[in-house]
Structures are given as structure tokens and as C-alpha cells.
Image 1 (cartoon, rainbow, N blue to C red):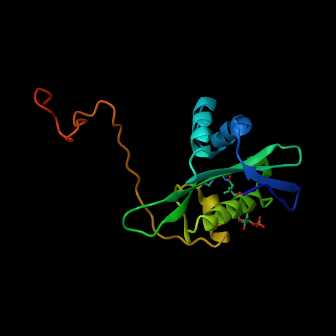
Image 2 (tube, rainbow, N blue to C red):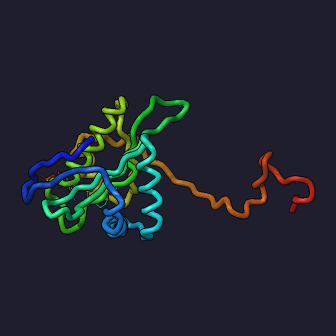
Image 3 (cartoon, rainbow, N blue to C red):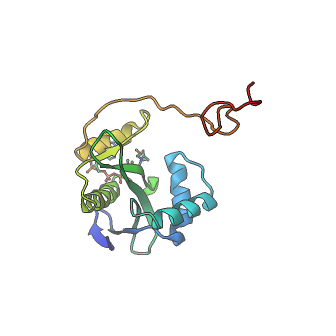
Length: 172
Ligand SMILES: CC(C)(COP(=O)(O)OP(=O)(O)OC[C@H]1O[C@@H](n2cnc3c(N)ncnc32)[C@H](O)[C@@H]1OP(=O)(O)O)[C@@H](O)C(=O)NCCC(=O)NCCS
């Protein structure tokens, strides 16, 4: 997908693929999303995504090329469901919200997903993001289910062996 330019209530906004020059802005906006990340991490992730056709990151920029928001969309393949696309992250600069920019970014993600022949878009959104829920429902999304998210640190796991259980002499 190339650059698309659309008018919002306030200004003309272009949506294009993210590039390395956008990294400081993606870092700044990620903070508004609640993620304190380094430029190094975002640089590595953008580089990896640019080589992976199953992912895409789009940015919204104003006529001065100022980054106003970003969206990450990815294809998901699970054994038990039809392939679908997922919004991995979406944020609009808090100074530019309610101007239609989120809708434009989501539209770019939808077009990318359709271009990749998937019929469903999913988004997992923290229960505290009440405003984002209003946004998604305004864009035609329906609440499918609510979940708990579990996480485990795999470093130093005593079961971290090839067979998935301690080897001789490793038992604790
Ligand atoms: C969610 C978010 C991306 C929406 O971006 P945005 O550019 O402000 O949204 P838009 O202006 O395109 O909104 C489109 C419509 O969605 C609805 N909407 C958007 N924000 C809303 C809010 N805070 N409260 C109620 N409805 C809202 C409105 O119907 C709006 O249309 P309107 O302004 O004509 O009434 C933005 O609020 C944001 O970045 N939030 C913080 C990060 C976040 O929670 N991201 C989602 C992670 S899952």
C-alpha cells in the first residue's frame, strides 16, 4: 500500500508505511500507549517487520511530515481458527485525538488485511481503555469476549531442557 492522503476535520493527513526515520515518534507515542520503550527496541522491531510480509506498521503524518499516530497490524495463523488479522497497537497523539486520525489508521489496517485475503480483524484491548472501546465500537467492532492474560519469564526455568523436563543431575 502506498501513501493515502485524506482530509480530517482539522487538516490533511497522509497514511504511509513506517520507516526508520519515524522511530523517535513511534517511541514518543508508544509512551502515550503506556509502553516505555527504547529507540533501539523500536528500531529492531521496525527492521524485522519491514522484512516480514505478515506484519505492517502505518503512520499518520501531517503536511509537515509530523507523525500523529501509528498502527501495527499482523496476520495470525492458529490451528483451530480461520486466518485473521490483529491490531497489535494503535495510538494517536493526545494533541490530535477526535480529529478522525484513528479512523484513518484503522482504515489502512483494514485495507491491508483485505489485501492479504483475511475476512476478520481482531483487537485485544485492556479493560481500562474505555475510550478505545468506544472508538472500536464506533468503527463497527463488537465485543466478542473478555479474557485474562498470563505471562511467564522463561529465563532460569528449571524445566528449560530439550525434553521439557530436568535432565539427569539437574533435578532440584
Ligand atoms: C483510541 C484512539 C486511537 C482513537 O483515535 P482518535 O483519532 O482520537 O479517534 P477518531 O477521531 O478517529 O474517532 C472516531 C470516532 O470514534 C469515537 N471515539 C473516539 N474516541 C472516543 C472517545 N474518547 N470517547 C468516545 N468516543 C470516541 C467517536 O465516535 C469518534 O467520532 P467523533 O469524534 O466524530 O464523535 C485514541 O484515543 C488513542 O490513541 N488512545 C490511547 C491509546 C489506545 O487506547 N489505543 C488503543 C489500544 S487497543
